[in-house]
Length: 265
Image (cartoon, rainbow, N blue to C red; front, side, top):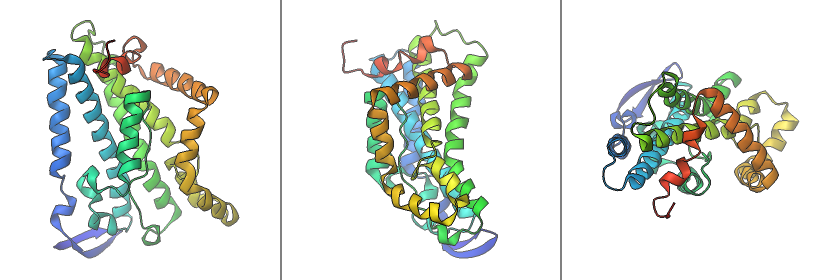
C-alpha cells in the first residue's frame, strides 16, 4: 500500500499495482500486435487472423475508453476507482461485463457497429465542480476519437492497400468502429457519455428527470438503432464521417464480411 495524489490531495491506501496495466490488458495488446502481423503476412486462415485483429483491437480501445474515464475521475478526487481496479486497464474489473464486453463484441460481429457500454462506476460525490464531472464523461469518447484519427493516418499518407489487402481492410474497419463508437457515445441521451457531459449543467428539475431515465438509456439507444429508419440515418451519417476522416469506403465496407471467418463469403 502507498500514498497517491488525487484531486489535489494526498490519499492513503491505494496499492501500487492498482495503477499498473494488468496482465489481461497486456495479453490483449500482444494478441492485437500478433494477429495484426499474421493478417499482414496472410498466415494460415487470414479471415480468422483479421477477426482476432479487429476484436482484440476493439477490446483494447474499450479498455482505454474506460481507463480515460477512471483516470480523470481519480485525478478529480475519486480514489475508489483505483481500489476497484479500473486503473489497471483490466476489462474483467468493469462493473457490468454484459454491457461492457459481451454486447459490444456481439454488436461488432453481427452488426459492424461500435456499441458503447456502461462500465466504470464513478463516485460523483467525491468529485467537486461541474466541469470536472463533464471532463470525466468526455474523456471516454475523446479516446475513441483519438483512436479513429490514429487509425486513419496510414490512409492519409497514401498506403498501397493492394499490398496486404486483408490487413488494410481490417485496419480501416477497426477505424470505422471507432467512428461509430464516437458518434454513439456523444449522443446526448440520459445514461450515455453524451448525456452525462451535459448532466452537471442541467437545472435541478431536469436533472431529476434525467436520473430517472438514465438506467434505461442504453436500452433506448439499442431500440432506436433497431428501427430501420433511425438505423439508416445513423449509418448514413457515420459513412459520411468516416469518408471525411479519410477511411477508404472501398476497404472498411468489406470489413464485416472479412472477419466473419465462419461464413463462406
